[in-house]
Image 1 (cartoon, rainbow, N blue to C red):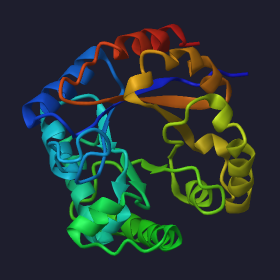
Image 2: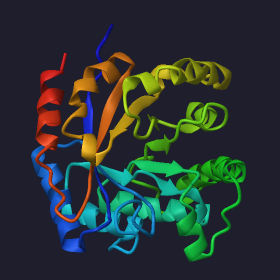
Image 3: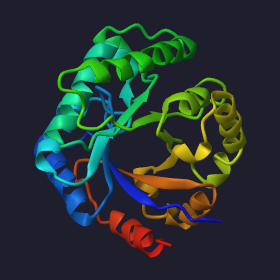
Length: 265
């Protein structure tokens, strides 16, 4: 078996901290040698104090783009429901330029009901949100080609999600990176791999064209390195380590980076 090149990402949760801390942590992740820098696209904390501090995704990414010079960055993931797809494409193109061509365009169908209710978006159903995502993706890709100037590079498209019938088919059709979100162990993902294989065959895409990514929750970053080789054996190449506020402690990331460097074949 050929061991894939491993990449380590850091997802800074934009909650329970402050803007200077988020920016300092972004620079720190790059200085440590992480490969990717992510945040999420929500309007309220996902856990902890529901009334805690929180910051918006794309404006934060623009700041990070200006503060960093090497690390790839993007949303994990932006919610398709929150912005017109033409506008979203333009925002992504602008961040790509601000970063010098380092944007990874992560997108998903959306799920956090509070965001929808508080900001006046129609929540709908999981099915209607996935249908909207399927409609938006070709619009976004087309808009990138017509913008002046276009993105520095065509941003790699990442979809986050594990739904076997609709999400994985969209993965097979459109994406460069499949992010299998935040499972508790490799065993959870193993049954999905033949499903993805079937959809790739249907869509006429080689599986090898899709990078596989997986996330580790903040409270497991210190312990789940034990599973890393198991994920690699399943073909996962990218590992996203969650880091929460208010301290944005990057120390546990060092062990993952050392493992990455020792796993180079």
